[in-house]
Image (cartoon, rainbow, N blue to C red; front, side, top):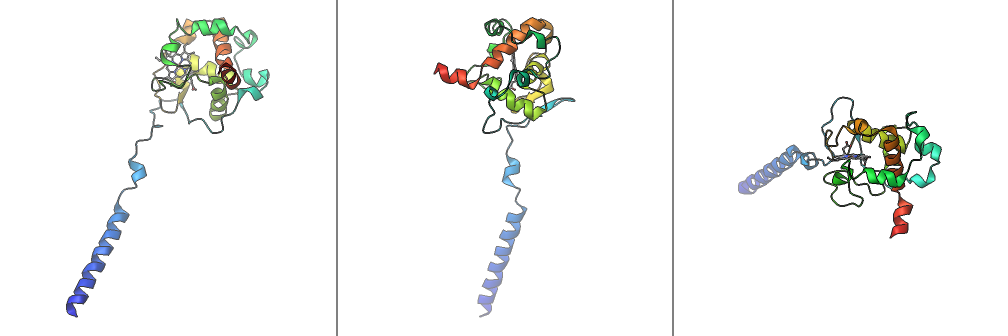
Length: 185
Ligand code: HEC
C-alpha cells in the first residue's frame, strides 16, 4: 500500500513538473525570424505586405491616380510609356526589378506594379499610386517595402532624371497593370 502511494505521489509530481516546464517553454512563434523584419532609419515608413484581394488601378480615375503629384510632374502626365520603358535599362532599374515574379530577393517585382501601388499608397497614406511610385523612385527610403532594407535602392534618381523623364517612367510603371498582363497571355 505504502509503495502504491509513493508511486502515485511520484507520478503526480512528475506530471506537475511536466506541466510547469511546458508552461515555461518559450512561445515557438517568438523564435521565428520574421521575413518582414526590416531595419528602419529615422523618417522611414515600413510598407506592410500587399493585402488580399489586391486593389486594382483600373477602377480609379486619372485624377485619383495622379493625385498629389508635384506641380513639376503633374502637367506632364501622362508621359510616353515607351520612352519610360527605355529609361529603365540605362538607369539600371531592370537590373534589380523584374517584370515577372522571379528574383524578388533583390528588389520588389514590377509585375502589376501599378495595382500594387494602389494598395501601397493606401497603406502609406500617399494621395495616389502615381505619387507613391514617384516618392519610391526619387526618395526610395521614405518607404521601405516589407522584406527589404532601406539603402538598397539607389538614392540618385531624383538628380539623374528630369521631370520629363520621371513623367515617362511613371507612365510606364502605371501601365504595368492587371488587364494588360491578362491580354498578353
Ligand atoms: C540596386 C537595386 C535597385 C535598382 C537599380 C533600382 N531599385 Fe527600385 N527598389 C530596390 C529595392 C531593394 C526596393 C525595396 C526597398 C525600398 O522600398 O526602398 C526598391 C523599391 C522600388 C519601388 C517600390 C516598389 C514597391 O513594390 O512598392 C519602386 C517603384 C522602384 N523601386 C522603382 C525603381 C526604378 C524606377 C528604378 C530605376 C530608375 C529602380 N527602382 C532601381 C532596388 C533597386
